[in-house]
Length: 198
Image (cartoon, rainbow, N blue to C red):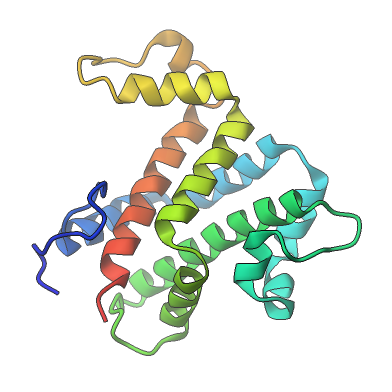
């Protein structure tokens, strides 16, 4: 694929492979904070069942097809299907982050190669388009931080005239989580761009 070829997703924030790789460098500049905020999101969801299912995600992935787990068609005792879906969305995100991080650490971000991390990324993409994953994770983040704050935050950053974050937005306890979510959205967009190269 030509680096400057047209992106199939017209709403994409990342237009070139070169830009996508630069996004990865920025996203993984602070691995601790990147993964810590994933657990912060889990904490804000405040559901011990989701937390327990998230910890069991590797086992669930071994026992069930990922597409069925995400569709809500898998019934697990003492849980609601929504809890299974939420835990698996977070498990999928963590898997993508760990896979890309491993590829970057070994300088092997080449999606034409037959590697276990590449296979994991392609398996996830075959189970849920990354654009759909981004949408569903966004809904989960909105639930975790509250609809009012999520909408106020996203509206603020979509207004080009605003140069500074309003105090009530910046000082909100979920500001860091929303900034992280913005980075995750761009990460998923970049990953969709580079992973289509076969």
